[in-house]
Length: 321
Image 1 (tube, one colour):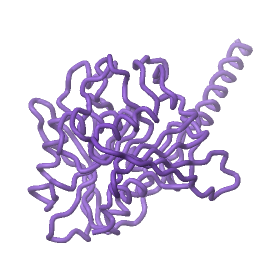
Image 2: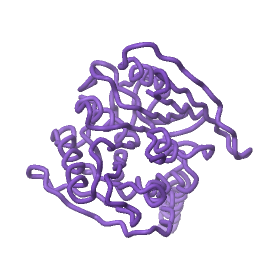
Image 3: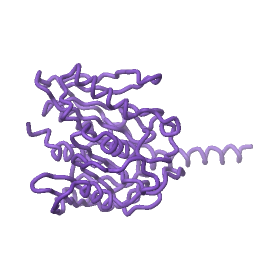
């Protein structure tokens, strides 16, 4: 009996240690902001949908941009707010735009993949309608300019951003994604038949979920179909625009010698207009690059050479009124 109890205790301690090492990441403390964040509700058909709203005290009475931040599978709007280092709230105070952090149906989105085994897909939840209603609410109550709506999506939220841009041409002025590639054609619900809005992508070459070079997607034991490579995804978006295109490439400055990752940027342009930007994080995981939040180790390594939220806002141009 004593031996059995000791073995059980050892197993519990071992499991707890492994969990703390690989899966636990403390939520960073929110910074001091000009306003309070609030949790809101709206009805979309028979479904009650929720979201977190940040309206900065710096908003003017003129029309302002809106940034919608979409979380990945298994988390929610509050978590992606923390995992982006609260940078969208800080930039909202700095530049004067509105922010929304919607919650997916049972922590996931009905994204661009035909066969994703998530509740939102199986129930065919109207997530496109939810986001469109959210935009309209902000337009009516917070002077948001419907021509300046941008979506930042992480993982499943990134593939939801793809769906919004492809299925509703003209709805968004730009998107940015982290850890998201296009599905292969047989698993794609929509295609970029119309020119895509400006797209910024961030992908890690050591992403344990979304393979940088394309292939099978595995979400902790769940098969999520196949994706094309990050480069092929970026090129497909660039090719949705007719006419000649040029590219520019650059290595980002390496800020921390102890950081085992590094980052490159490739930009597709048409004249002076930026169509697509692909940030390749060499050795990076399924992580949002930024300076504050820690991710579970099982998600891979984080790069601190740049902030994905700030690069997205700069790429969209909404910090330069």
